[in-house]
Image (cartoon, rainbow, N blue to C red):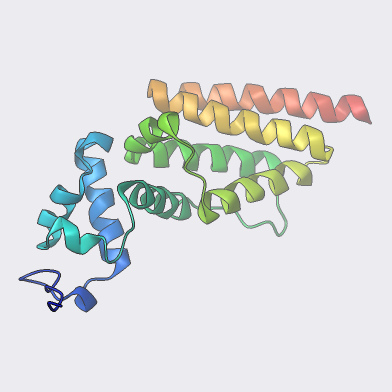
Length: 184
């Protein structure tokens, strides 16, 4: 039996961390889109072989999930203490739109496959909590949250200028507020 070959000639396997790989993948994705993310290109960027990446990341799909979760995790969430729901929803929608404009590959990737992870789940639960803080029922809060996300994604896809996005979101929230008033 032969001894295993070292993972790279340059960087020992233990010297590379998953976070470095993810950040390099995000940089590649930001520069060239989803098509630019190959294990060979990523390995070259990190100074290692593509095969060495598999010691840290199981597949390109897993790498894409980790990259997506990392960017979702960087999206600011408003504090829930003393929360005013309308400004919080506007901020969350704007933060989501801004994140998607900074990382347009994520829009393309989301159309190909689900990219749910812990950070995306945390974002969605936080958004739901903001909607529930308005006084909406759970069902209405879920629908409002989904509407805000859909609007933000659509605005990012269209690269809609901020004043139009703000007007559209204000109009959407006017409808949510009218629903609340009608219930009381």
